[in-house]
Image (cartoon, rainbow, N blue to C red):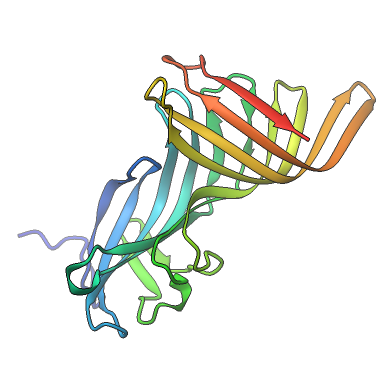
Length: 232
């Protein structure tokens, strides 16, 4: 029996490195910690999960949105009378990049992964542990801002560059979906409050307050993806 690394702190949890997949949406790899807690409302045993060093991937191996170095908080609420469990998740704080999509690029740190099917605001759920210990360090459980509505998306404020031609800054949201023709996983992007800047030499054109729609179709190999975009 090897107790090395356990330390002297009073602790009861499960921890380690793993990949968590949210079906049809995003995969999350990092250092996780799991703790159970008693639900003050139902008396049931629920689960709180924290993670550090998260790499979140939305899309396919050849074309995807990636967030590196994020932290994650996840709460799973047991179903009532044998019903299905529900959960809320938020991951943020990492570095954001687009991978394998020729002509589209951004590097930022404004995106968050948000999922909530609890039917309530997880910030108001009583007895959730305030801190979870993971194999990569302690994680503060902060669900503020996720709200009570149903949500499954990656969202935040970033700047998107197109072919070194125009830059688009605003509030973006990303979702994956199954292409009914090819069966592949495509990416849909919407944005509001867009400030578009086209600069050539010393002359620039600016458009403020626009909306944007973008669809990305991943290619069969790296850097062969295609896309269509409109902002107006």
